[in-house]
Each structure stands twice: as structure tokens, then as C-alpha cells.
Length: 307
Length: 226
Image (cartoon, rainbow over all chains, first blue to last red; front, side, top):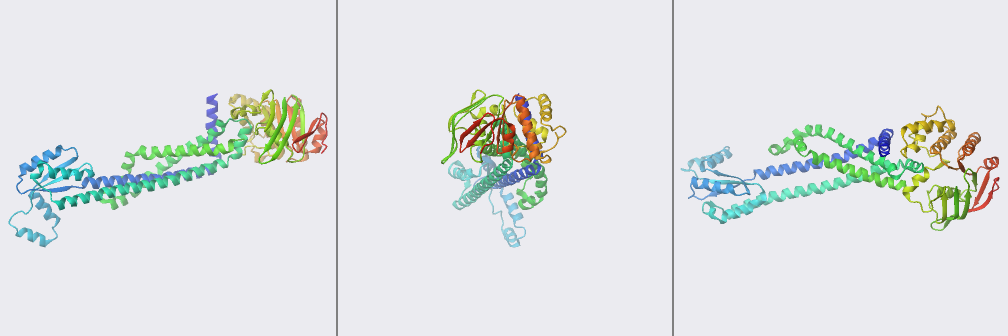
């Protein structure tokens, strides 16, 4: 009994999709477009999160060692710092390496290079390069370093500390703003998409209102009348997500060179990013599509089912 | 078979569609319900098929008190009553066979039974060879035959026809009325709601006359008197 009813409901749903081909096509297209805009926002958010993570990862703070600190003491200090859980990386930069980097950085500036050559000795002292897991931990770590036993080997000047703090706060604020902005835009687009899909399904069922009345008059139960429309919603969602996947991958491959050109060393493979978040992007969107089509179907049918 | 006791139906704000209607129709009868437009004939039919509930009174169909019928019970009632409308109410995207089979499909009748029953009713209404046609490929008379066939698949004890000949010419009207008489002779109670004076007079069956929501005439071999 249940199997007969279920198979008929599925058959009616598929028949309705095929016999109302153009309406089905429009509905699937609108759901696909809605998912498409949401997907792009997903990818934009993933890309901005990735870029910020790279920027944060590349943000180092250099702290000068005091003139009295020996390379051995510096290495000991590095070993101690590496034990701190918040620190990702700590490295001793020798005076020679600092000089070398300075020269490389100013290789086009003859005046600076000549001035440097006129000095008898290396003007640079050794320093520590510190990189942390979470950029917001920086101020706390810097404050710790200035207080404890490390203080005798390190020269944390107020200005240097303030500059580092401002830079780190700036990056943190920028990161939060982008994420908050992305979330607001995403919510805005998701709400618009939901309303458009909801309306499309309602219009689709409006065209079936006479059919619903006839079904009721020949003795169909409410669940039998409603179920084909709910199954139609699920089928539309499956088709829309399938089309979305078929279009999104080639499109991402196409725009990848432009993304690489824009983000340069901060760029990443969009397809890899999408694959890493496959269920988040497609799974959640499929679930949202199913919920919205099924709910719109349910409420739209309810309006015409009272015969 | 059908018993209306003091049935009234009001619509807001102050429209009286039916007022204190008492009606008793026995099994196997052929009853014509006549009256001018807006007198309450269609409301009477709607109450019989539980499309509406009475404001007052009691309705019993085949021993089943449907006065306060629950929504989930309505499909079971409708499977026992065949209904024919003036505007046919056929599914335009289904062909003749599918339209008739649909009434059986909705109540989980196995496919083998559907394949057996549908050709039988198609034969009764004289639509053999037109099973694959869609409603728009049929004449008005043929569409009404499909509706009658659909209403017969459950072998109902009661067939209600609301202005079934309203959109038909005289030849098709005669054929549909003959078909209803044939169905009645096979034991089904038939209630015919009509405006058509000639049809009522030719039937020589029971006639109930309604005016302004009240029964003003009930004759066992009546004529159209309005």
C-alpha cells in the first residue's frame, strides 16, 4: 500500500516536471542563479579568509637584541621562545644577515650603499624574528617579553612596540571588517535568493491550483496531493546543484589567472579551495535549496488544498 | 441514502444560502434538483461532498453522519460519491485513460486492477478508441463522458451531477442524460442538478424544487414548474 502510493507520488512528480517543461526549466534556472550568487559569496569569503590568513602568517615582528647579548644567548632565547605555545616561529637574525638583507633591499640606492661602505664596522645588531599563530596574541607576547627575564637581552623601545601594535591592530581590524562585510552581503543575497525561489515555487504551484482541486474532488488525501510538489522541489534542488557544479568548476578555472594576477603571492587555487570546502559550499546550499523549495511547496499547496 | 435534517448554510456577513432544508433520498432513486441560479442548488451539492459544512442541522450520507466530518475523512467520503461538474474538471495534462485511472491511483489501487477497471468504464461511457486523447482533443460531450467514467471507477452508490449538460448541445445533452439513466438502472442513486426544463420533463422522475434556499416543491414524478 505504502509502496504503491510512494511510487505513484514519485511518478506524478516526474510527470509534472516533464509535462510542465518550461515552467520546470524556469524554476531550476532561478534556483541555480540564486545558488550561483550565494556560491560566489562563499568563495569570496573563503578567498578573503585565505588571503588574510596568509597576510597574518607573513606578519613578523623584529626585536633588536642589546649590544651585550651574545649569539649563544640569542640562540638560548630563541629556544625558550619556541616553547611558548602562542609562538609559531622564532629565529635569531645575525648582524651579518641583517646587513646582507639591508644591502639587498637598497641595492638601487647608491647613496645608502656608499654611506654603509664608509662605516668601519657593521652598524646592525642581532635581532629576533617572531611569528605567532594568532595575530591578536602579538601585543600580549610583546608585553611579556618586555617584562620577564628576556628583558635584559632585548631592546623593546616604546615606539617600536607601538608601531608593531598599530600594524597588528590594523590587520586585525581589516580582517574583522572584511569578514563582517562579507557576512552582511552574504545574508543580504541569501535573503533575496530565498525570496525569489520561494516566489517562483509559489507561482509554479499557482498554475496547478485547478489540478489540486480536482485531485481533492476525486478523493485524494492531502498528503497524496502535497507529496508530488514536495518531491518536485527536491528534484529541482538536485538539478540546480548539479548545474551549479557543472558551471562553477570551469568558471573558476577560467578566472584563476585573473585572481593570480590580482592577489599575486597571496593567491590560491580556487578549485582546491572549493574542493576543500566541497560539503560546506554544495552540501549546505543543497540543504537550503531543499528546505526552501519544500517549505514553499508545502505552504503554496496548503492554500489550494482546502476543497 | 441521503438525509438532510433542518440544514441551513449561512455565509458572512448575512447571506442565507440554505434555510432549514429537510430532505430524504432513498437508495436507487433518480432525483432532479431544479431552481433558478443562486437559489442554493450547488450549495446543497457542496454539503453532500463535504466541500462545505452546514451552519446548522445534520447530514447523513449512506448511514455516515458527515455534519462535522474531519478533514482526513473527506477523501474516504469522496471515493464513495461520484461527482460530475458542468466545467468537467479534467486534468489537461493527462489523457483520457490517465484522467479516469487517476481517481483509482489516488487511493493506492494496484495497477492490475486499474488496467481492468478503466477499460470497463470507458466502454460503459462509449469512449473506446479515445483512451490516448487529451481533453483538448475531445468535444464537450466526450469530456463529460470522461468525467462520468472517472466518477464511476469506485462503483459509487451515489452519483451527483451538477449541471452536467450546461455546456452541451441538445444531442450531447440527450446522450449524457441517457448515460445517467443507464447508470441509475444499474443501481446507483443519481442526483441531477439542472436548469434544463426539457431534460427534467422528459425524465419523469422525482423533482425537488429549490427557491431562495428553501425546498418549495418535491414531486415523485414531477415537472419543471418554475
